[in-house]
Length: 120
Image (cartoon, rainbow, N blue to C red; front, side):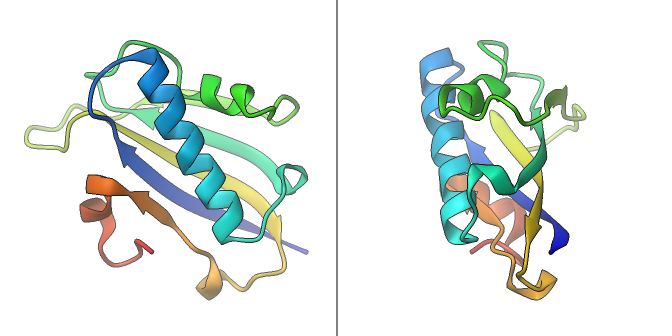
């Protein structure tokens, strides 16, 4: 079993804790499903949020999905002029038999524009 990294992002419509929980939960669920992963395959998850998001910690969405024994951490993205606003990004470290080339990176909605080269 190899250690793989899976990326993903979602742009929120508004800075609201409930909306963040729904959108980040949807993103995490899509990452797991599209890669054939179970919660037990998660090693750790990094969440970043753009500086305009203040309503909640993105990791709270993972806890809401029952991901309670996986190390999670939140950080703030760099404040770059012209960057897409209200974005939560995920970098999940997982155990998987998939080769690196078969990992499905998930960019939902408008966030797909961030990485057209790897968005599925």
